[in-house]
Amino acid sequence: MDVADMGEDLKEVLVTEEEIGLRLDEMAARIDADYAGQDLLLVGVLKGAVYVMADLSRRLHRSAPMDWMAVSSYGSGTKSSGVVRILKDLDTDITDRHVLIVEDIIDSGLTLSWLVGNLSSRGAASVEIAALLRKPEAAKVEVDVKYVGFDIPTEFVVGYGLDYAEQYRNLPFIGTLRPEVYGG
Ligand code: XMP
Ligand code: MG
Image 1 (tube, rainbow, N blue to C red):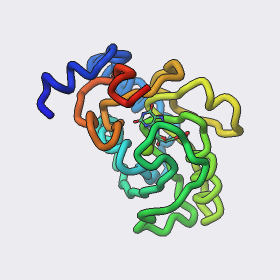
Image 2: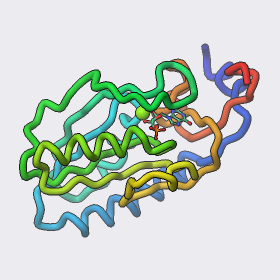
Image 3: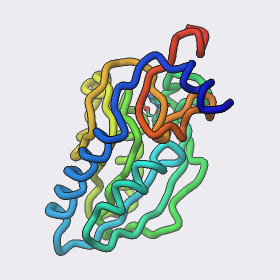
Image 4: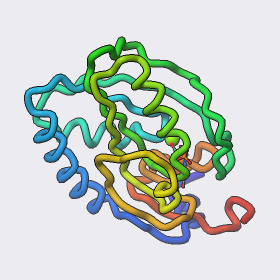
């Protein structure tokens, strides 16, 4: 699929590349301030958070080691299954570490609330979340996202790390797909 084909599949652009960059500047400044004098470990959730991790971490004015987890809650479809499975675990012992989970999106909140519980149970000093996007559904679960980029409507989005069936991740902005594309 070339760029023109990806463009044809899009319905609209929800968040532009420039808006993402400006918001990440703000989030990074807050993280710098909040974690001043503390040891910080960024934990990215593969694969969607790759772009957020790269662009957020390089905006921090501090050392910020990173580690990665891969969990599965979605399969290749567009609905959360509610079942979270660890596909790749951390390489790091997080006992007494201040952990900041870096995520692309919080939708039902099932994945992140499970992840916060899981990492807390390993003895982390603190576990907080930075998510680029949040859908309204997330308000229904007990998961406190300390740093949120953008609140977006309940619609399936792609780009900036987010995929549909592994496509569209490398679009530099957040967009919605025409329903025909996923048979909606
Ligand atoms: P929950 O529902 O557990 O979901 O908060 C979190 C994970 O689901 C994926 N997700 C999406 N992926 N477009 C995507 O490409 C979306 O609109 C979307 N909503 C949820 C994502 O992997 C996230 O980590
Ligand atoms: Mg994801």
